[in-house]
Image (cartoon, rainbow, N blue to C red):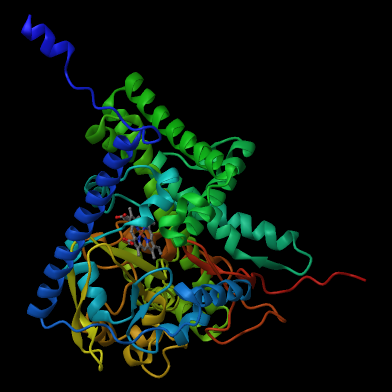
Length: 529
Ligand code: HEM
């Protein structure tokens, strides 16, 4: 009875009128404050840990800071935006990025940029594990999906043992296409650049898919090329928007990415269906890249993602290498003469196909490719983010010679473009296209002794996996162009501007804004009127 009473007569907490719901609000307030306090305390103790680490390693802060006037350094962003249409964005950045080898840039938060080879060596090699790609992955994810570098590394090791067949037939197609373009042009002038992009799309798809995109009907082939180019173009903008990549996702971007991904899946399925019908050995013979990926992944979508990853890494980079090399060769006829002599000496005149061995004999050609990659590095600027506090060897203190600490989560950019044009590293003629500088091999040793002073194909564990293929492909094409069109030259009236004043197009890669215009044949056609 008494128990019953205890239950029924339990005191009821009555909430005064007007205060209903306060219990919940108080709880929410306590939660917010305690979460914030916890976060603040974590941050504070992490900062203390980082400061102690910095002191222990003798670090000093980076004191060279880019001056700015508007909050969050918006004026620096605005100046860059205004410089965009000039086609000389990287040149515009030169005075900013070379005031000191390592500078602090406070655009929308604290960030750093370096052109110091010792720092770049620490980022790419010595302290590689301390960094992630960070926001770059977000920018590219809709197009590329997941990537698995370890697996690709094995693939490329196998490729280096193979022949150059994915290149051979495409070079022939490319030569016919440029000859037809010259014949069809009223003044005989051909812009080689778009042809290089078509050529490298053909070789890279042949390498990866087992058959080139040119095996598709014309409509599909054009759709694939256009969607791929559009998706790469938008991805380049998204990468620059960093953590704000999500704000720029035009509707066509998603459909272009879907289309490219669908084509990659189409080729993967084709190879896997072939395997089911003709067996694994026949399929491996015909579609080695896809079948090897399948062996390891057993997932069609993951296979597709790897194919796209390599397609985007390999296609535009090699096209730009070719385009800039020919751009400078036609402006320097003595270099064409030297290359033609070298080719005549080293390549048997009756050689229907070139071998790796033939190409490896062409030392001066390799110097030209080095020189192009020095002045026009593909991925001219790059960025990494610290996954833990990490020390960079130089840039701290008043003279910029002390180590300094990059805090966890902070980004560091480096400009290969500006480093490769530095007089301190490459001498007073650093801004001249002069392949001879590489000839005796001492320059290469010297710049490697400074740290990562020459990044043709990057350095450290993320070194370009397609380096060998790219060099073979570019060399093969150049040899054939110079053999087939010995009179190739700069058309009259096309400017021969000094390095640095040529107009550039900066997307993920660095191409020539005005293409690569040449005359292929001895006699310019004259139109009768
Ligand atoms: C002139 C031509 C090329 C240049 C200058 C070049 C340059 C580079 C650079 C700088 C990187 C490092 C990117 C980074 O980690 O930030 C890279 C990575 C890579 N490249 Fe190349 N590349 C070229 C051609 C190729 C070709 C032809 C292929 C394949 C057919 C290829 C496949 C790759 C792959 C798979 C990676 C690894 C990407 C990663 O680990 O995320 N590259 N390349």
